[in-house]
Length: 408
Image 1: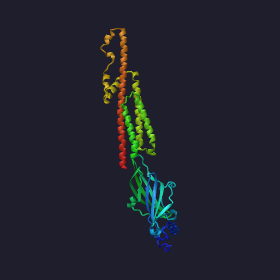
Image 2: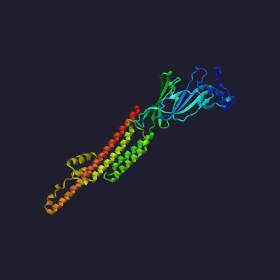
Image 3: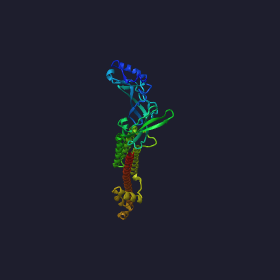
Image 4: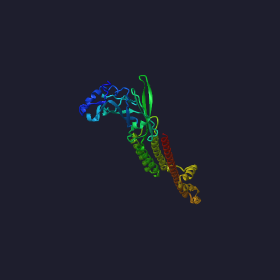
C-alpha cells in the first residue's frame, strides 16, 4: 500500500475533467481510511463556522484538511479545483452536540479538491444552540450561547489565539458579537478511553434600535398625548372621547407589534411591564375623567359641602394646585347674614316669601359652584399625581435598564 501510493502526485492522460476523474478513481476506493501515506502523519482539520441566528442557529460549517493522495499538477490535468461527491472521500467525524433533532438544513453532496491536496467541505447545519435565555432586559439583553464540537476518532489541537480567526459571526443586523471564548474538554468514554470536545461560548448583544423606534418611542409619544389631554375641560364630552380613542389606538398598536416581543417564560421582560404600565395609566386617566365629569354634571343636585370639605379643598388643596377661585367662593356667606334682611322682613309676608325663594335659589347656585370648584381641584390634583407617577416610573425603569445592561 505504501509503495503503491508513495507518490502523492496524480497523473492525468489529458488536461480535461474526464481524465482528472479517471485519475481520482483509485483514490475513491480509499475513502474509509485517513488520507495519509504514513499513518503517523497528523491530519489537521480546520473548522470555520458562520452563525446566522442565536436560538435556532443556522450554521455554515466549513472544514479543511489535507488529502495526501489527491495532489496533481494543474497544468497537466487542466484544472486546479475539482468537485467530487463527498461520499467518495474520507471526511472527519466532527459533530455539533447541540443537535436536538434531525438536521433539516439542505444537504450539499459535493466536496471540493484543490491541486495542493486541500479538501474543502462546506455544509449548512441547523442546530438548537444552548443559550441561557435572559429576556428580562429585552431589547437591551445579552445572550450567552454555546456551540460544542467533538470527534470520537480525532484528537483536537486547540489554540486559544486562533479562536477569533476560526469563528466568523454573521449578525444579520439583529445581533452584535461582543465576545467569543473557547475551552477544550476531555470527555471519558468506555469505548475509546476518552475523546476531545471544544466548546465555543458566544456572547451576543441585541441591536435595540428597531425595538426602541417601533415600541418604546411610540408608547412614550402616546402617553405624552394622554398627559396633555388633561388640558381639555373635564366636563366636556370631547375629553372622554379623545381618551377612549387614544386607548383604542394604543391597543391596536400593541396587537400589531406583538410579534416583536419575545415569548416569555418564567421571567417577565421589563418592556412588558413598561407597555402594560402605559396602557394602565391611559385607562386610569379615562376612569378619572369619567368620574370627574359625572361629579361636575351632577353638582347641581348636591347640598352645600360641609365646612371641613370646603376648608380642605377650597383653601388648602386649592392653593396647593394653584386654583384661585377658592378664595372668592369661601368669602361668600349665606344670604341669611345679609344686612338687608331686617328691611325685607318688614315688607310683609309677600316679600318674605319672595326673599325665601331668592335665598334658596342663591344657596343652590353657591353650592353648585362650590362642588364644581372642588371637582376642578380634584382633577388638577390627580393630573399632578399622574405626572409624578409617570416621571418616577419612567426614571425607575430606565435606571434598571441602564444598571442591569452595564452589569451584564
